[in-house]
Length: 544
Image 1: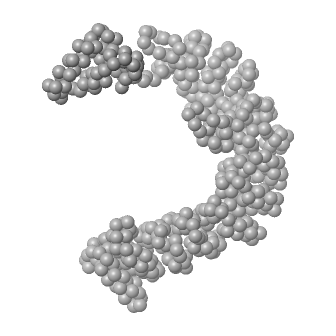
Image 2: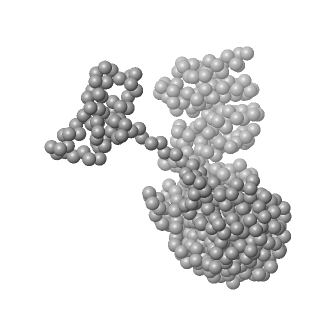
Image 3: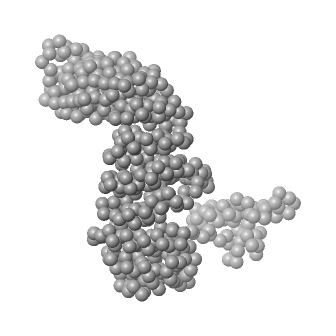
């Protein structure tokens, strides 16, 4: 460590020895040797009286850094006893937003409007009617944190709040200059969507959904200091954290709760599908999903207009939800959009398109070509296909279709695809696996078995009923795959080998098949020769 004034010059030689001084000072005196102590005294004499040693003649120890949370200027206990007049005075006094900019007493920072508003919100939850009236006495120039606190408190009130009370609070906050409380108002409508809202109330929400300036830019593609982008690049998350987007999400809740809202919001929706922000459009897709419940043709027509923008919108979760519910009845109308997604250069868009295409193909014969495109497409296409067929395999009505396609994926040349397809065995319970003998047989005979056998072995271990006879085949293939390399079956596959030993003993003891038992014994002999981990323990338990 060099002192600030160190220079590589003739004058710099004067500082020679200072690094040693710093190092020796840091050693506990009882651990310093006599030589180290003499050297330390030498350097202390040299630098005595210089700024490098400070007033004490020794190196000053570093100062610790302390972090303290900045609390509310008024405690919760005191706030619970405050009158309306005292609240108004407190709001006027603590109207600054920059917490810690003022002092309560020397050395102690206090919070501002943000911290006090948190205390206010808790009081509103307890007495919503009182503060629903008091908010009308808040001055217009009061920090918006206080108005947001009342809105959130009303939303989460401990007692049921009627529509008129909630509307009065919304009207007060809506009338503020610049209308800063859009997100809190939207949250109130979303949480209280079951109330019988009037046209006046719906107009307030519509105004925020269509006319608010937030968002002014696509934050999900905007860089943040230190690297990365806002919301980790997630379009929908950016949308619901904006005013217009959160208002759209509230519209969706209202339509879900009351189908009559669909007609009321028709004109606003025709404008919203053209919103300049992709993030907001992702929230509009959520509204259109709600519209599907009452007018499917209208929802699909609006969705097609919504998608007239960059491909990135098609990779959002809200768009995927819409497609999930719309494709079963409107595949023909949405086919061009699905093709666009499958051909996109964006992996997330391809993934969403492939999942929904494969899901549709399970039910709809006309979607078979889309599934075939995914099964023979890129790694992203095939991974998405495997995910869908794994997820739906255990549904009786989808089993045949899923099983046939998973068998194809077991033989994929990409290990990632095989690994995803092999997950189909993981969730089997009870005696379910015994009903999928052909699938197990195909997996055992496929290249996927060697690298991905664990999930199948685990499923067999969980089986509570009689083990299917195909278990013997699994054990046999396991030994064939790993037995040629003794180190593998003893080390890297030790955990699976332990289970295999138990399975082999179980299937032998449970089976009455005279042809199967000799096969089991042959496998036991081979495992014994290899010194397979866990075999001795399994045999001892069987002998008991």
